[in-house]
Each structure stands twice: as structure tokens, then as C-alpha cells.
Length: 601
Image 1 (tube, rainbow, N blue to C red):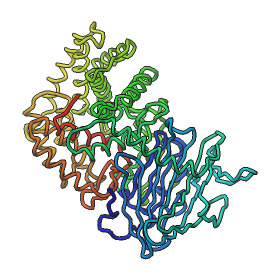
Image 2 (cartoon, rainbow, N blue to C red; image 1 turned 90 degrees about the vertical axis):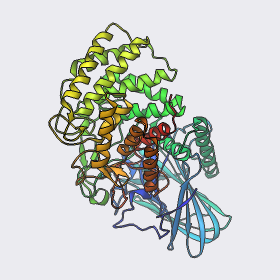
Image 3 (spheres, rainbow, N blue to C red; image 1 turned 180 degrees about the vertical axis):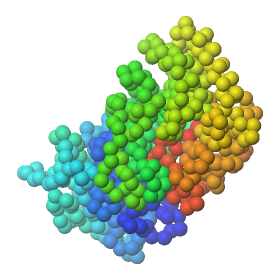
Image 4 (cartoon, helix red, strand yellow; image 1 turned 60 degrees about the vertical axis):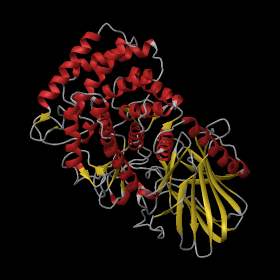
């Protein structure tokens, strides 16, 4: 269903060249993700892969960044929305002279993903006449490449470093200028008429010059494929529309060449405007992969869950238990800064990620919870995977007393309560899986003893009588919203967990949202996953009605776009913050909705 953007029905406007983040919808085909704005401009596309340097980067460089705009040349209003059950997106533009629809897709073919990237944009007349300006500005990959156009007897191609692309268009589109920097064109659309513009691109590969009619047909082929996938989910619980939309967002982040799951599709979108918390999320975190695998299992997307778990086990075996990996399974590089203005002048713009050098105990809990859910859903672990998990359980039992960076990847190492709970979770699941024959049982007694010692240590050191809550780490009075996850992990004393959730809601809540931890509100917005974690915890603790009320409230507050959610939100303005689409947000929504529905594996 299409809805006005903004919801007030006013014209879409840029401020200093920037759109609000909630103006963007995500397009994808399992290899890359593009962000299309409500004014018809695609301002972000890393092509051909999710983690490639961007071809379009106006999101981070509004004046001269690469983009692909199809925009009415007169004042307009917009209605936006995905087709039901699909990642094909539509925008309806209304001007004084008419109304037209823009339908967008990163195309796939009848047999799945195409050998090239194909970004298709169909323009259809609905009423009257609408004239469109079409602008294709080639990005410079962070000022590291000089775009150019070359021509031969078969046509013209554009080149950006190793990327070669074709600008394809139907006969009614009139090319006005074409040079090494940009291509501009125009088209006039009347009711019942349809035109198409598209980009076909690949890196270090020859390209077929696809007929425009074939590209246009593949929009519908892609839509059918998305709808078939959604229909196979078979979800029958509450909030079906929101669960399916979030599942489709997660599917965009599943990198089909390897099975890796990216945390988000962007880099350096700020957690607070003007701040320095701007990070590259185009990598695969063990934590996120584990949560997404569980969400896919709960929805019946077994092929995706199996692919992701296979990828995870393979690279744990090859490289050890790291916090994150590249989408191809390599070690993530250290942070580097790019000379770009950043979103709303929020610098620095980064590639790489500093968390690559951290240790987080949480990875143990994530790995074992994922494996436990996999076998609970009827999956079978091979002997090599079982041996790997046993080694990781030994490692967890050996190292749990050490300080770490915690779930929030903080520079100050501490005995974070959430990390200790994750170690307990890992060993608890390891013991259970060994008892059921899924893991070698020769070390089970050791794991059990370590599990019990961790539980006693947490209750002795991390509970605050003054706060009536578990605190962030021993000796402090700070709260940590991620401790709501302890309920899902089946840790400890339900009464203490209930009191902890109440304290989190009371002290970290801001409207329908929640901050990550105490005193972080001056630096960033509210972290959306924390709210859904709290809702799930309350439901599991027997407060389903209150949890449902909170779910309804946050969904209403987030109803600002087509359903592409970010990492954070400004609780005052409602503006989206942080990278998007954010996998952790969408999967936490799914977990909360499924739990509210009383469903499980």
C-alpha cells in the first residue's frame, strides 16, 4: 500500500542537499543494495557487491556525489511503498499537470541472480502529463577513481575503476548531454504510456547488451520471485505485514554468493547528527548472523538459515572466533577515513571497522544459541561442526573470567554483565546439546561446572540492590538495555530479570524507544533493537498485553516510510539515524512479533 512521504503530504524537500534517512527504500537482488529516495534519486549503490566501493554516494556527498535521479521537473508530492510481498518498490509522483508511477527493481532472472547487476526503473503515466528529468552522475568511489565513457560500434559504456556499465533506455527517453562526468536526459509521460531507464553493470567482466524490453520484463520476474519466497515463509502469527516486510529486508542483507549476512547496507550514517559515531556496517557480525539465522528458522526460511550457518561454521573453522568477517569470510581491515562530507556533515566517513581487533564474549552465546535453534528445528550438525563447537565451548569455559569489549564494542574493557550472561548461555546450550548427542560429551561435566560458576558470579557481582537491577558491569550504577536478552537466553532468576526490565524501561526509555545504556543520550539516538528486545522479554515474563501495547506504539512511531528501518531513531523528532536497512532492527522486530504470537520452533 502506498502512503504519502512525508506523511503530511507536503512536497519532498532536500535540506542542504540531503534527504531524511526515512525517505529511502532499499532495493536488492542478493548481491547488492541500492537506496532510492522519495524524490526519485538513487543516492547509494555499492556495485556489484554489498561491500564494493559505492557507484552512487550522494548520501554522503550531496554536492558532487554519484546518483541516478528520475524526478519530475515541476513541484510534486510523493506516495511510496513496496509491492505486497516483494522488494520491488513504487513511487507515485503527483504534479499540477498529472500523475506518474516509478517502479524500481534490482532485477533477477528466471533462474535466480543474473551474472550482472541490473537496476531497472520503469516510468508509467497514470493521469495527464508529467515531464521527468533524468540525471546519472557517476561516483568517484570516494575520490579514488576517475569515471570516463568509451564508445565502439556496439555502443557506449561508462567506467569507474574496474566497474563497467551501460545506461539503457527506451525510445521515448531523449539524451541531452553525455560526458565523462554524467548523462542527462528527459522524458514526457502521458496516461497509459511507459518508458524505462536502467543500468547494467559488472566488475572486470564483459557485458551483454540486454534489450530494454527484456530488462522491463525482468521487473515482473523479480517481483514474482520475491512473492514466491514470501509465500513460502508460511507465517501465520500476529503482525504478519510487518514480519514479512522485515523478513524481506533481512533477505536483502543475505549475500547470496557466500551465504554471509551483512549487518547493514551502508557505511558512516551517523548515530547522532554531527557526531563521530559513524561506522561501516557492510560486514558480517557473528552476533547478527546468529540472530538472523534464528529469525529465518522461526519463519521457515530453512534454505537461508542453512546457507548462513554453513558460512558461519566454515569461517569460524578457518579463522577462529572473530567478532566480524568480510562477506567473503576474510579478516576485516582496520578503519580508514574517506575524504567525503558525510551525511549532514557528520564525519568521519569510514571503511573497515575497529571491532575487528576486539574480543567479545558474546560471540560464544550467539554461536551456540544459533546451533541449538538449528538442531531444535530438525537440522543435523556434521561431525566437523560438532567438533568445532566443542572446541569453542572449551574456549569459553577457559576465558569467561577475562574482561572484554561487550556487545556495544566499547573501547573500555570491563567485566560486562551481558558478556558473562552470554558465556553462561553458550555453556548452557553446549551442555544441553551434548546431553542430546549433538556434541561430543567428554567435556560436558567441565562445561556444566563453568556454567554454574558463571551464574553464581553474576548474581554475586552484577546485581545492584540500590537499582533493583542487574547493572552494566560490577561496581557501577549504569543500566544496559541489552540485558533484556537474558530472558530469551533463559538465564537465572525470573524475579531479578523482571525488575531489570522494569528498570531499563524506566531509566532508558524515551517515548516508545530506548537508549542502549545509561548516559549515552547526548551522543546518539535510541537503539531500535533494544525496544524490541524489551518487548520480547516482557512477553516471555508473562506481560504479553503490556508487550503488545509497546509493540503497537513503536510500530506506529516508525510508520514514516516504506518499511526500511535504520539502526536508531531520534526520540524527539522521530528522524531515523544510523546505517540502513539495519538487520538487527528487523530481526528483533520479527523475534518480538513471533514471541507475542506464542510461536516458536
